[in-house]
Structure formats: structure tokens, C-alpha cells
Image 1 (spheres, rainbow, N blue to C red):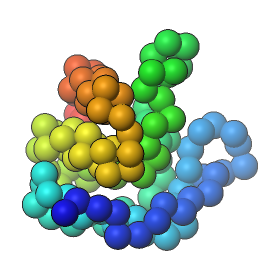
Image 2: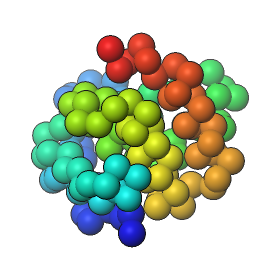
Image 3: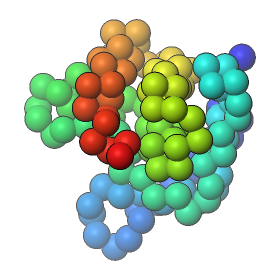
Image 4: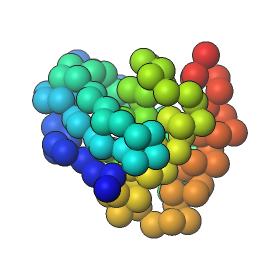
Length: 120
């Protein structure tokens, strides 16, 4: 069963309020979709969900699941799985944290449509 094995703990990555965070302990996620367990290491830097700050877009999809966003950021950074699997893990991990299905679909559709620029 997919699940987070640890809790997300993080702090501001620096003294500036630029929306970047650093993990203060590893985040461990067990994924059925990928068939493996991912460990996001302590110190990993993330901006959480890279959602455009356009009011309606952010309202619908932003600030949904920090845990899922951190795992997805690590998958896009380290590329241990293909991009389509990384995006499926985002949707799966969002479900684990209770994000409604319609919002998970919007988040997934967004990363499928526009995530290629961050993947490369």
C-alpha cells in the first residue's frame, strides 16, 4: 500500500523569503505505482509545488500536498524513474495525503503538459 513512512519536516532554505525550503530530515515514500520506496534526503531543497502564481491556477492546484510535491521535485531532480512514472507518483502521493480526485487530476495534467521544461 502506498504511504509516507516518515513525516515532512523542513525549514526555510535561507534567510530570504523566496519560497525555497530544505528538508530537516529524510522524507520516505513507498510507491505502488513505481514499485519502489523513495528517500528524499535531509537537506534536499524544494520550492514545493511549482504552480504558476496566476490567481485561478494557484487557487485550484497550489498548496495542495507539500509531501507529494517534495517527492515529485526529487524525482525530477534525480530522475530515478521515467517522467511519466514521476508524474504518476505525484498523483498517487497526493491521493495518500487526501487531495481530492479533481485536484489531483488538475495537478497531474499540469505536470504532464508543462513539466517537460523542468525535466530536461
